[in-house]
Length: 422
Image 1: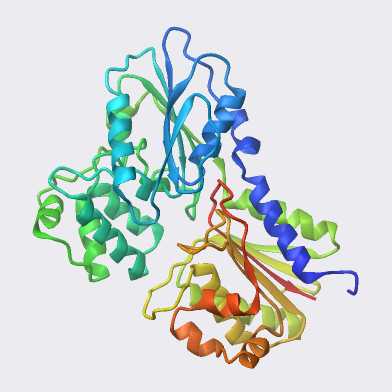
Image 2: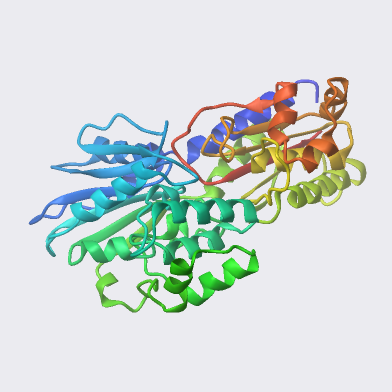
């Protein structure tokens, strides 16, 4: 198909995916009516929280105020709702202070008041209020260990909830008896609202016992005081049968599936058949990369299970068990594994990017793979397999000039992957 520019098509698909889940597009339709006899307070956290707050301000009728916390560099120009920036993925003192202020802000509300809570991925690290007897430094250490362990997002957030004074529904209880309406941009496979940002306003069915089992599964040791929090049940979260949640409601306003469908529309318009595999893929990034490579080979060489030209699209959140010392990112790791498995198969191109614009903790969203990526790297003295073993996907694609750098998108529905087979 000589009229197709593979690189540009993949970038256009990624842009459409991100645009489809932006706050200004998705949020206004879900805004509740202002409380006629009380005040409205806006709180929230996540990589998309500032953009969500801006969308609320732009469409809200009446008085409004509050506080949201977002990642450094992900702020927005809000006039009435204060935006605080803090660290992600490892929490810092700015996040702890913001979470403490938020808990103070919701004290003394009445049943006539409305709390509008804006939640998106990243909120777990940004709302860093340690539970009783636990220090911020201890929470930081556990966070780092979880990030390196290969634990999935549900497992990480289960642990985080039980060491927190604000997550796992505790923020909603602090708002009682006010009514709480939570609007969520989902960054978790399956779109479970209680997992997104560790569910600060949602009841939590998970237990201290489950959190302890996760720590043991990944061999993560914690100080005695944190262990005691779990074994004694002191860290237990409020459960779904708690009557204080009865008046509250929540809406997931943006999901990975919406992003994938928007990207599919771009492919269709270019005359390429889109094939959406799944919006909730999990697993080690390098393993998922190998599976995608095997599928791409089957399509390219045998026309199964899809006929080319086509583009295979998937979402979800992979993980990386860090063993090397390179600069990584799960999307770069996925693509580097994909590259080593394909070994230069012609007419296969791919993109893998995080929809928040940041692949892990680096400054790129992800990267683009081309059929000659491995051979070009070898000419530069870069060996794909060795760099994969060192978790250095960033370094590999940076050397090729194939990183995708967008800056913060101020939304987050996790990974976006597209494999174009011509």
